[in-house]
Length: 355
Image (cartoon, rainbow, N blue to C red):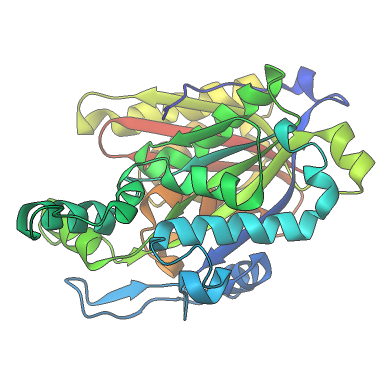
């Protein structure tokens, strides 16, 4: 479980071995599949609905359950976030075809998470304190309490045998996962990486967010988005399109909340310089809504904003992955910027080249 520092891929590296995003899929409050997410984002339709929890509304994946999505075999003890991750990875593999896993040990999985399943952790802890002796708890439920459950189960379920990594970095998790996946490929550890993040909605998570923010947090959402990151020549050989080129990814820390804006401005400027992209060339910014003035300051203008959080809620660890998916869903060309702020002290951004 790693939170990786930023790795920049400069314009000079945009050669035949440049890394590209060549496929993606999502399970979101808009429905199952990337097409449903893209349609919802392009329509600007909110997926929020009335909720019985502490928040008046929430955005849940409609009619989703592990059994319905994956079948009854092997899903009896599977928690929601794991089922979301396994299902999203499965849909991406279906779209790419069986050839992608012709050498399963050369395909990696880098999956982001918040705390794993908050519901599973709290339920298991409660059973340990209140359950009947001698066993107290159901041992089959224990795997759901560890952070790498979703990533590990995704690999086991789909027989992926390459490097398997769990990333946890709050709102920046999706960008951190992309940075880590880039380094896995650059280091020759695999030939392709399924990279993304997943998050579940539960009453337990809702109450934690509510109390932690004293009721000021945004409505919550859930879902997962996963991308295929691979060398451009591999995508071309397989007949997959170049959807985006991650040109640079940068992260920066801040100690005082008042310093978040300054840190993000510096972060964006550094990423643009590394990518060799002028601020005027950024067509739009996929934002989580935080510190947008700082992004505008870095660009020297107010850009066109793409905001998916108001549509699907605060998806926590999956936020940045949904922002990446939203950028791809526009179908636009040029350059885009994806930005994020983790209130605990980190900012980050990715510069995308959209063909």
